[in-house]
Length: 532
Image (cartoon, rainbow, N blue to C red):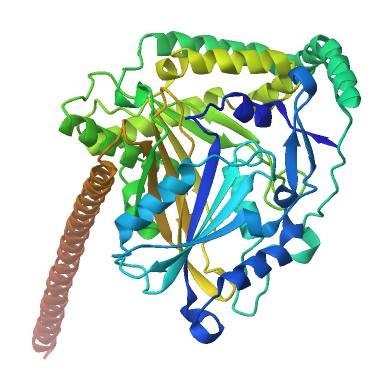
């Protein structure tokens, strides 16, 4: 038996009929590189079947403890049927980008069958009329419950299906493949007894955890108090993203070359890719709300998941399913008009938050929540979802998950691009997922029809915001180049003057030498004349 962690279980407890804790990863494939130039649906099923051993997510389902006395368990899905989990569809005419976005939004909106392994795959064929995507391409949308995987776990899950070449060499080496253990079904009595025992132990376990981290807790408390005092001065404004959401999702995305972000980094010394992502989103939110005459005077605040897994080579942590994340909640400085100053402010904000959380804070919270009774977590989650608390803390969720920076393949088809759809909740009506692959970065927006009926316009705001930073970066480079040119010209002038002075000095010295020789010769002549 394997029990869900407290963090995993939270995604079950916070779920409602219209706020599903589901994450969808979308991959677009070009079949022209596959044998014969096509990939049949049956071949995709067989390929997934051959890779089931790469992740335990495929064949296990959730089993709840009676009366929720303890966190649920993972058990083997005895009725696992791969053809139930992998579905097939085709885009209707005109098979364009809008039709694809509608299909993906509807797929993401449908709840998973939690009596089965919590994942589904939807193969969408007939993508024939989308600029930038080869005709005949198809999409593979993989939906997974958040209780089973966070962003990095989904990358690893999907990576188990990918090959690094057209020969079919798996991305995940054989020695790192995760064995598919059999999860036995515990009896209700076993689970109830264990739940009661864990409940009785929890106060002591929480106390022991605090004692273990005692040397660093005082500093963490000081940091938290300082942060709260600062945040108390900055209220989170109410926006359309903090209102009640509908169950009907909308989706769109846009892609930029990753290389275009490098010059932008020069606008704020020390800034990271994540800072630039937040700056692009901040500018887009400012433009979008300004267009609707809803831009508040105070800055919006983002909810930003942070991966706290170990090194990628570690199977113990980096490649395990489930959730292992901390969070940041930086101000986006949407009240700053200048894009460069906004980026600098965001960089300063994230640097300050990282410093405040440096050390063991993320691990401490993970260990503490692990020992909080399930019934307490369940009650807290439901109270939070029914209240307006979430909307008082942040305005938007922004998640940045890096992917492979080399081409990968499945069934011989080349992965063209990947994007993501995230979970929504009441008071959190916009999720921006940022993914990178093979030198490209994609911004994906998930919202609902009530919150964002014009998601295509928001994507244009993303593009405009990025273009602002790109232009500012180009101007900055031009200024630096001009300054460097001026310095070189000044140096050249100085060098030229030195050369001229040296030449003039040489001429003077040469003249002096000639004059001296003449004088010496004249004296010698005079002396000779006098003697004679």
